[in-house]
Length: 187
Image 1 (spheres, rainbow, N blue to C red):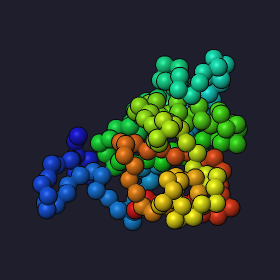
Image 2 (cartoon, rainbow, N blue to C red):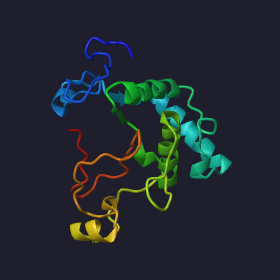
Image 3 (cartoon, rainbow, N blue to C red):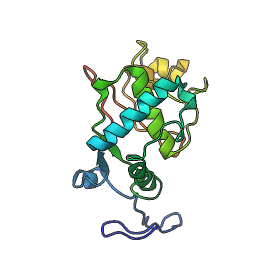
């Protein structure tokens, strides 16, 4: 990785030494920059739309979606830059402007999974082998249920504490603004 005007190149360090890394940032620093936000262009949205309808016309299952079956000749190069930023740069990005209201849930899932195919390889996120889950309260479980009964926190109304998932890249797509809660934080 090369040094940029605002971020130093990644340098290996030992425990107790100062971290020098492009992913060394604070939420306050990110508020001062829009560099980590990608606003979809009309052409990129049209590209996604064509890929979504191609998957639908082919009758593909979510697990059959790949870069080959979800071609993005316009948006693909931007996703390559986003992937580089995720793996070797800031370590996060926000993609804005996907017209959720134009699509049903299955089409949104296809778009999300298709975009993900350009960023990495999907891996299971739970003991059931699911590679795509919905962050939605489907139970009235409280914090004790989550801690003791194995209820997944993202399926409850319980506020999730800061945590790190056990994969290289995590993605979220907001389908609907909740009546309350549901805030994601970058700290």
